[in-house]
Length: 389
Image 1 (tube, rainbow, N blue to C red):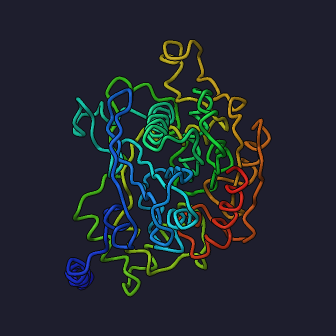
Image 2 (image 1 turned 120 degrees about the vertical axis):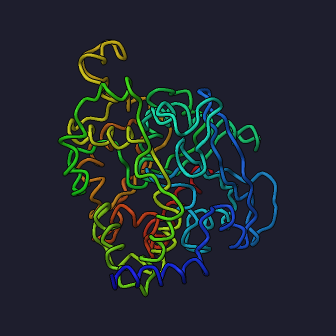
């Protein structure tokens, strides 16, 4: 009872001083110009993109090269700005002269709309990261190039944002011509050696071939609402007695690294995450862990012949990823093991950088929330991007 009273009293404080949860509002609050753009995919999902067209430090100059940023699973465009100016990658790239566009995959906070299907229908959620790779990312890149008049973008993805890039290149190799360089942070393709205890615990069950998802539809994974969000913010304030529990939740996903986690950021993380995803996205990653392969969704030997013409799902064609690829990975990443990343590296036809972050405890979520991400990752990304200008 005492704990409940304490949580409710803290919640009252939070409601009076709630962190900014909307990505666009956060960008404007940080003093940067912001635009919202809506993109419709060829299968009729509506996606919201956030754009920082220029930096207040440089002014509105013409012909700025484009940087396209793609978030991970259960994340959104907010993660690229969460740590604020001079620390977050979106602001760093904007200050360096880039026209920064941040995508949002179907089903997350900013992309929960379809021309025909409401989110209450299971068919809305009947997608994996495969569909994000073949529909969402190409549609957003095409839109960005049309609006800006540029011929190519510099691509930066984190976690699932790297997965969908490789899916796009495998299935739509013509998009190689639209990429100057691809910077993959925490590359998630091969997952056989993944150490995340949560995924390893559920993968033996959830990672089995799944024919039911096509028959009855999928559903939202880890749905959020305002009450859960407010409770998360209340419990995860740096001064809260539950702050350590919140930190452990982050560590269980990506690896323990207390040195890179700013506890003051926890309530802001809870204000924007989880941002929404489909159960199928999680199932697909569990399948990758079980199989040790980078391949399409396994519907079972009954349905696979109808979908693929074979009993097992086909592997993605990594040989099609011919645009320059640069890999950035950490030794303490529980999602993307060093061995799995190097297996990916050895199959890429145009691998330009093998960058093991020079910080022994660098974990999966440090790429977006690490206090020293600029020092250990973003400065290197910016340096490499300039070589492909």
